[in-house]
Length: 433
Image 1 (cartoon, helix red, strand yellow):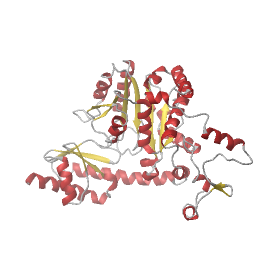
Image 2 (cartoon, rainbow, N blue to C red):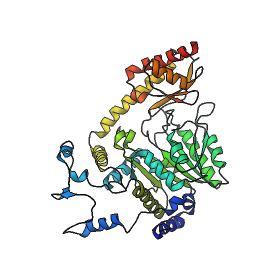
Image 3 (tube, rainbow, N blue to C red):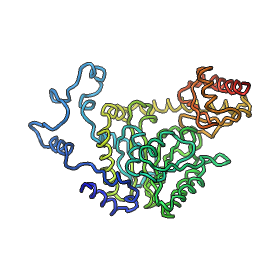
Image 4 (cartoon, one colour):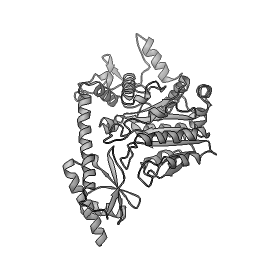
């Protein structure tokens, strides 16, 4: 093992031995080189005032070399904020501004000890970093039966972790915190579990209420008190899109520093929050009462980034930072929020209107995010999906035998009734076939 990795491990052990026990083999072996090209280049940037022959970019006229056909399209931004490499951890000002935003939008973080957000290549990359640092063969990754399919690729296929699911909803359609606790306590012999908390949930569009959120935190705390080391990952991809009475904060704030055996991790980003899906700007943030643990986890995260993508895209970080600082940002974001809320409310009004009866479908609770899920009573979801796309030109997502996911986020409010009319017609077609 590289001595630098060993030093980071010792810092984590001294600060919280349970966090050290959570690390995968790769997590223990990874480090960010203190002595290498990047560190030598940084030293040269600070001190080599005559010539700096270390940087792996081309320069011209005192700045990054670039093509006019590109710069003329991006002339609102200085070349220095576009063409050079962004630091592996991301633009420092963007990290600071995002942390301030987290505190503003999550009051429960006030007074908690957590690190500076590290820029990732959007949220999937952040989840992949978690998988690399903490998951390996046989480790349990716990999440609901209604989930984003990419978790399987990220944690099971890539890292050979064992996937453990529990029903998302109870019989009265509230969050199944007892199921979560049971799944966690089943890992006592292993002594470790990675928990994925995705709210608003993909695919159902559900966010728990305050009491349910407290029950989730209590379940994780009980598991920790029973001796299970829990990596509690808040996948906050759709954060902020809360349309009804639900949690309005990430559970990261309540999980931060809740118990020495709980490592809270927040994965979020501009991707959906700021409607910039293709920019691929996300963040990963750790919580720990020990500053040395936070520093070591950051260095290990930078090691993963350096070994995979080297650093995230500079232009999109600049664009996001510029938007976050713009005076009109909050007003424009609120405008888009109202559009999304209007679509969600329209869907619920349609489904509750009685127009379609109650014999063909019911729906899972939804109050947030991009999606809702129908639970079909009479036909197979995949057969319906195929029928709708080929006979009605309507695309939906089939999940298992009964569930049909519909993304109201990408359908204008005035078209939603027509959409559900077509789904209903498709079901009746299959029933009569």
